[in-house]
Image (cartoon, rainbow, N blue to C red; front, side, top):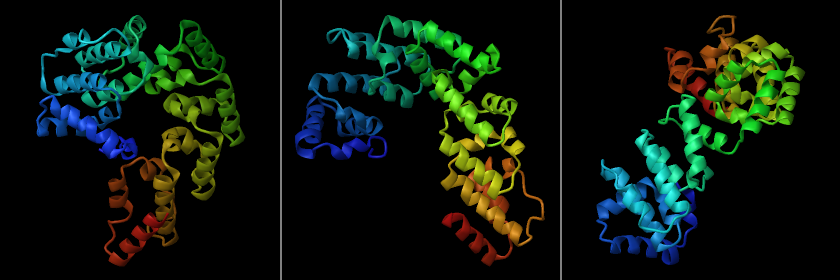
Length: 315
């Protein structure tokens, strides 16, 4: 529960948590039911007011346990407003097949799209027509982005991308991969281009990288420089390897890239993988276990395995 809702630690046990749990128990909720629901959505304990908590609790209970939702009755049990809109809108998303994890995160958030009415309906229609899968987090991202942007702003973003050599299909493709791409401002885009050009990439290579991995536009100049310098200068991978595998710029330098890179350098210094550097994709784009199986745990010399694991963990 703490991992889901860390703020739970800040709530006063006697003045806040205790009374809320007692209130829910007073509504004849069984210990099993109460534990099940609160463990699923601990954020409910951060809400204020018995009536508000009741509505959230009832909706979550209904969603978890009742296949034939009673949300319409819930909506009429309190005055019109954001909470009513939220229950109705989240219920619509539920009918589209959105999983509980995403539904509940929207329910307890102050996300504008699910608090509206007419605009929510229009935004939802657009996002569905764009082909986003309601079972994914990208659907929620697209909902948030489109809700906050009018037609004029969207057109301006398209024109910005087109001025940089992207066609309409490229822009939509980037949006489908990373909905936040439409929020990128002109200044952010120009700063990003300047950073990549300064590192030796051409404009065409930058465009190719964005098409394959749109989030690279959103990375800070410092992050791009730091990761590129490690991959190119310390690991000696060519820039073209980054152009072909731009997603590696999204990996954690400390938790993934550096540990794996240091293991590879150790193996090469010992002549255990030949003189040729393994491809960037083979080293960085596989899962942790595949990497360890491939480069660390496959050696018969157990002392070497221990040494390589120490290098991996120390990085």
